[in-house]
Amino acid sequence: MRVTEGAGAPYAISIGVSMLAAGLLTAPAAGAGPAHCNDAFCTPGITPGVVLGSTCDNTTYYVFGTAVAGPSVNEGRLVFCGSPRRYEPRWFRSPPMFGVRDLGSNCGTEEEFGVAQAPDGLFLYCGTINDKLTWRRGDT
Image (cartoon, rainbow, N blue to C red; front, side, top):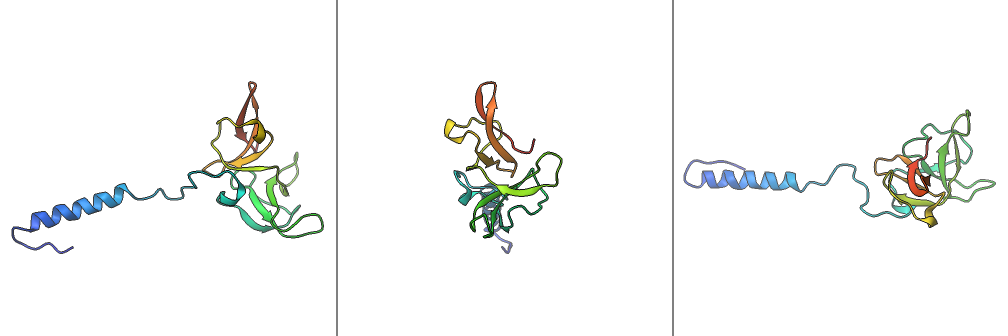
């Protein structure tokens, strides 16, 4: 916007400032996930084309992937990166996936033993704490 001298200049400046402020106030949050997500299809950060049983490197954040076809897995099968005992992390078949959930929030009986992802990508599973089903860290 060009500011010129004269009676209209203060008015033009106030419009410019108002437009800038409105733009800053309505900008979407960077990296925000879907507002409502109940399955793997809307979960962000899923790695495509992984090989079931091959090594992986992150068992904490964005641990989900979809498998390529193989002898014992169909193409597109949901898998997750996990570390059994002290062994190197590998891709395993995933339990039922319930989309994006909040760490510590309640999960229903239909979600028990299921997995999800927190908005920041943290791996979660539905387990019992103090006789209450709760979304817990899946990497511990």
